[in-house]
Length: 230
Ligand code: SF4
Image 1 (cartoon, protein in one colour):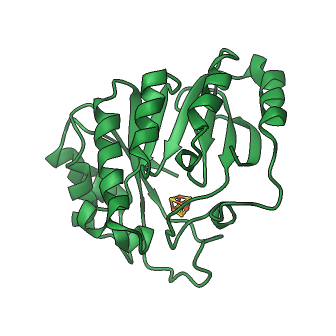
Image 2: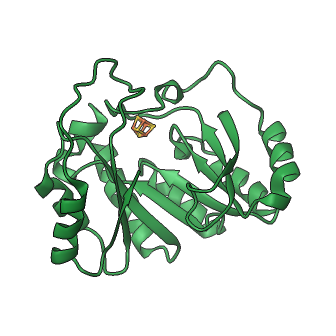
């Protein structure tokens, strides 16, 4: 595992849980609005050892329900399932954030029962996916689609979420994405943030009205649980 950072406490990143956050290094995508661009290269300047992070989690464990593992993209690390097992062995729950690029590793995590909650970014409608993630082999989008289905069928709590950037998304796009979800599934929407982005001069477009989109989704897909995150 290449670990770039550790945040000892979050009350908002794991629904209903007190958690810490591990940030992994490396991501194959190039979302123009990425707000953690320093986590994209496969190596970072100040990586932390797995042992030191596990020690820290052990010290923090009495005040935690779980650990959020996010990126970068955690599934670019083949040893991720083993690492998650070590967290589970400390008696903590695991929430895994993924962009979906590695369905085989997600399947492995399911087989080993090392994840309690999945959060997957659905970047766009499948046919427009590369508008957000940049030029990648076609297989990358296929993989995201597979991961989406694996998570839907996996029997583990999960949510899907989309960061909305109105230069790339319109209302119809977001409603189409909501249509991929099944009754009872959770869909979180959030506006792009401009403080720090991969593309240094990201055009600040006027935002879509997420309250209106939420109502539109609720009218078309009343059994999808829509939430707007701030
Ligand atoms: S926002 Fe995009 S580029 Fe940034 S870490 Fe997530 S998937 Fe990778």
